[in-house]
Length: 406
Image 1 (cartoon, rainbow, N blue to C red):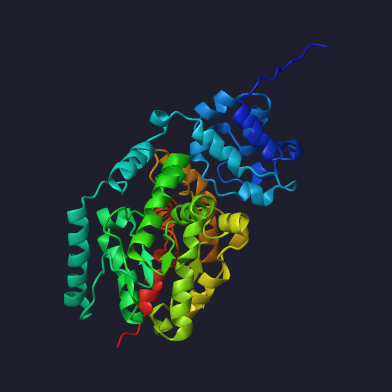
Image 2: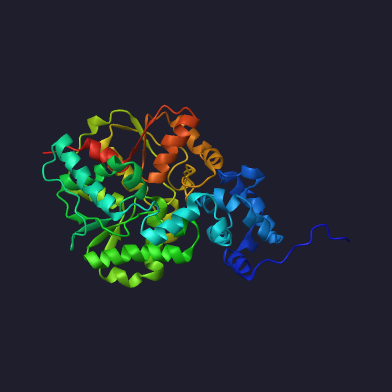
């Protein structure tokens, strides 16, 4: 009998990844495709991609947009009845693309981050001036006498890494954390060099750069002798940092530890170090579960942050409603894995349509997020695209706006 489809051979590296992912267990049932918000982009879906790989069409998949329009949210993993691990496959497909063929600004951001310590290339003098000037504005505008942004303070309790997007274009967005630290009388600091919280090596599947950026963060912790690192607010940045520490620099944890932003906010509220007035947020609020702060760290480290943000919101908001689906089954908003900075805005908006539907069906007036890319995607793309009548706030912004200051 004549063979209609003749499978091709694939690279040894991809073959090994497919073996580790246990692709032989795949039933081709399509559950991954049904649960994936990217299904339909360029007439592709996860099941089709994996069948293409099974037939050796490796180069065709690598040359397509699929590895880059997939946000790596791992909802396919969550849905798969056979437990096939698809994340490493997706990373391998990204890594196989020649670096100068990495789409849009992603490669440029990665190169700039490697060369200048932040992906936008903000000069150190401008960065330091911005921190000083921002604190002075808070003294003048809000009367927060004595507020400062401590740079390179040795022995601080917390070291945090600024978000380069905010440093470059939205500096006022940093002030909410500054205000919370001020109210809690916290001993904290930020580094003067290699301060970018994003990990462009992680977004572009460049392990060498991923490791180099995590090394910057580890080196800053060691140099400044800080007690605790606050993992970056960017979901991908926090996951990349945590994975990098455990994979490449585990010995560093003998000298210090890390926490998530939820741990800090919950600690302050539980210990009474900050006090809040929930009547300042009377509108109906809901919470968007970040894939990287929830499902992805749950799969990688055994526990996601689901209950903590909801407890924090309950302290600061009078009315709360859940989106459906939520928590580990929540839909990705469409901006993960560097998609917000990438060139495929049409794909990102299409991907986010299910999140927009969840928001609309909830009836919420305020959508609370805990990742900078999620905030931008929902506020700047999904809100106008789907005519959502909502306000979007970071969870730390909600806390800062609810503060009762002495």
